[in-house]
Length: 417
Image (tube, rainbow, N blue to C red):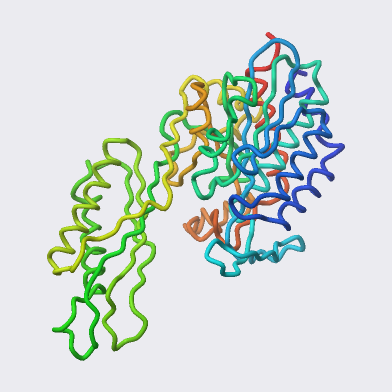
């Protein structure tokens, strides 16, 4: 039995308590920057396991430190926040929570992206590592980050002095529930998750009666022309074969059918995998919108507001190879190689600020039989995805798989040689 197996031999006894903790987190989700109860819960568990704990980093961020002799310093990260989504899973521990959003409106809240699972796995790994200190050497840094969903949590922790409050890491590791069969893990070297830019654009017209369109400048027509023309950014301005996306996810204008409004608001989402392409796409979007406004005779220039910005998540090749080899040794044929994902993640900001390599992997989120039936029917796209009201990973084997993955990856650095 190797060091990883010896550590994981302690999993079964407290599994019921770990599952209960997960269900409690699931029933008490909190939005980005408001993860106060969640932070207290994870900090309390880390203290119970013997970690030195730092709280309030970048708002609600939590960091634990467990020094166990000379050796590498390994940072493991999970996220604290949930989403403004109404859960529709039907389980007895489903969230019924609501809260006031930043705009003052009451919204439902749910862990519809799996951050509750990520936290529970990381705490499980922390407990197992703390209970088996004779099997490894070095320092373990479990990190719980706020506000991943809004894209500013990682930078907030860095700006809040994270790197002055923890030992300097040698490597940073993280995982996320992704498409695939529960019980599997998958790695991807190099660019893995796309850069993202979310932009709010306001374009201006001149209001008028719907019966007198000649007296107005219609921002609804203007918005429509912009939407159509933006479809050419990917098809005509990006090198064929590059993975890029431009989505117009929201359009708002007017209040009644017979009133031409004086402005329209569009929200855009842009995904890319290289900085030159990213800049070219953003420049094209600005150029097209400004040109369409001029063509429509807008009385003023459009306004652009960046709502969120995520960097490219680019897995270090050597760190990824090391983790992949460890996964193959532990999981066998359940260790896979993943394709690039067009979702986004701000985790890389932390290791980039520390100047250390990182790798980020996926764990399957769907029951095996359900996944295989959908695959056979050609209906994988119908399975509940992250951010869906129906999103809910199977508790078993997902919780165990994620816990084992974190221990196995950490031990790729911390196991004595």
